[in-house]
Image (tube, rainbow, N blue to C red; front, side):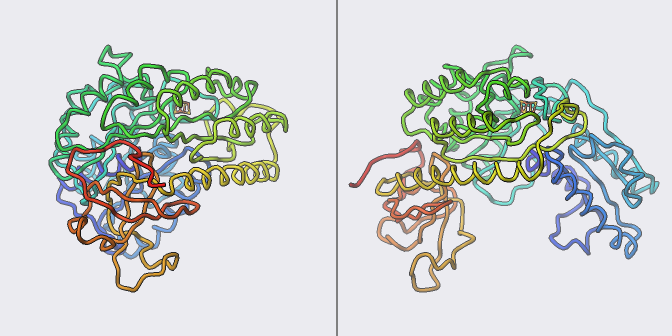
Length: 459
Ligand code: SF4
């Protein structure tokens, strides 16, 4: 969501005449877009802001702004803590940047704007978004959250849940497709409750509308809350052609006692039932999740229940974090905090288990032919893992199940002469690594064919 917000910030600054630069020293304006979901992210933001002091001394006209969730949470305290900051703007103040920045330019004043309102639907104002030529783009479909998990700051820094009107979303996606985007990831804290409060269409209905946009090849979405994840979405995953074979369904813990303390509003049994229905309806779908270890009061028995759940589900991938106290989150007050040492040990144990599953899932792909959406040249193209003469361009893309596949462009020049970002390429998976797959292109597909999942096994 911060990536999406940064794009919006850039678009609004471009409208004021600013251009992006990769060289900090020559910038006239620096915006730091922050995250406060964990303590470490916040520390990093303040450390970076501190380092900007020297730049401001050398260039007194420099304007420095802080946006995002830390700005929303800390407000004017940031001006006191970081004296060289000119602007603090909250999560709903991005639209007001075209007014705030000129005011600072003219009056050299310091401004704090962290007002939160219920209304956060954006009119179709995204046609001016700057794009970097990537084939994939985020699109926010809703903002804020009503769930109040006890460890989480999102409802406090992003406000209550509101959904954007489908017309605005569809208009934005059509604009993105016109500018070359082939894949969108629809964003919300809980996409399953999209439109319910406002009486708009349901999330599966929205998926169906997005699916009909010509030129768009793939649809992803995140995040689904297990309590609202129902059969309608499971069926949409199966039947909606462009929706990818991947779901991110955060479980957070495998212990009912901890889930209750987290205020997650589902049980371990309910989560496992939904996973079973999902896997029955959509065989081959990839499932990833989030887990927090060391939540206050988590015993060895609770932790073992989480490990046990992981063994039952066999996630394709996992984002695992140690619990950290966040300001305003109720769990700050909870007793029986777990020591850092124990938290780290549990995290390592859990990640070791997950690594086995990730490798196993990747290995299972070897021999299959997968449609890959080509994203660009691989960052690791000089990697020595595959013995090839240089210079050979190594490309990268993703399967429908969101696994990274690298391959050489000219492995099959006869059938694959026109590989470039945005193309769907049928690729035979030859090798599996810890975090990626290696393949050989078989054929470049026509725009609309074979967008979903695995096509065949060669052996
Ligand atoms: S569902 Fe829970 S964890 Fe997710 S954003 Fe809302 S409060 Fe935070």
